[in-house]
Length: 338
Ligand code: GH3
Ligand code: MG
Ligand code: MG
Image (cartoon, rainbow, N blue to C red; front, side, top):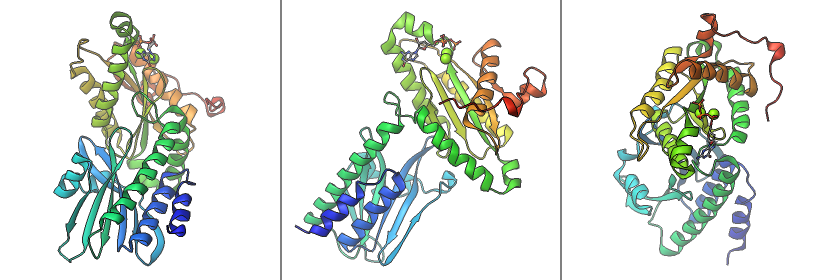
């Protein structure tokens, strides 16, 4: 048994962050398979199209890890561009093929408890043999278990969406990015926070029971994933409330995106229940925002939407401009919510 391999494997389990975990796994594979490169992709659902977001690429001899930024997902290759990769995801199994240059490409699914969430692509001079494949399989199982542990703390168990606790950390990253980005671009394509709440959800529970209520929550979570782009972040905030963080959207674009969710839910035929609607309030995220103050602005727009017919999308800043709501002063803001 190769003891340095055991040491490297043990090291991968010390990471509490997806990027460093992915680095450790990709580097280990390049070393022990003597591969040309190892790349890890994350599968993202970009408004119904499955795309591959490159997370980490390690090339032999190049020890400098490269983590990819969360760029615009519409620029990522789609899964169906490469039929062998698509097959790997659909069948949850390894595919190996020879590339035009003569190198072999081994493509393996990275799985979560629920689904294939990414791909590992190993390029090497020759086909991986049974023993090597066994090693890669075992390392991917370790990766899967480590990712499940990270998920356990970050995700909601019913819907698989990010949870409220994760929102705060995510928000801090977003704020740093907003501060770092070019001021003009920020003006043209700001970020937005939306708060969606199911209308009259209590009556769904009361008339059909909690199990049906939970099914509605699950279906709405799935509709949300289809409605938004891969770079947008979706959280379940508790009960029947969801938070959406939209990245780089114009004011008109944000209204279209949020209203698309409203219309999609309205049009969906929920089994046994029929029609369900949501109301949504949203607000622009500013550079100096705190997580509490922007959620509160979205919440007052949501409250307004609830009081004006439900099945309704309202923007906080527009309501302030119309004199319907009053903006709070900065001094009142940001007593921490968590
Ligand atoms: P509104 O249109 O004003 O939002 O009305 P509503 O009935 O949706 O609002 P309210 O806040 O009065 O009720 C929310 C209900 O959501 C209360 C509770 O029964 C239900 N609920 C909260 N969490 C869960 C959950 O995890 N599963 C189920 N099935 N129901 C939940
Ligand atoms: Mg509610
Ligand atoms: Mg509600």
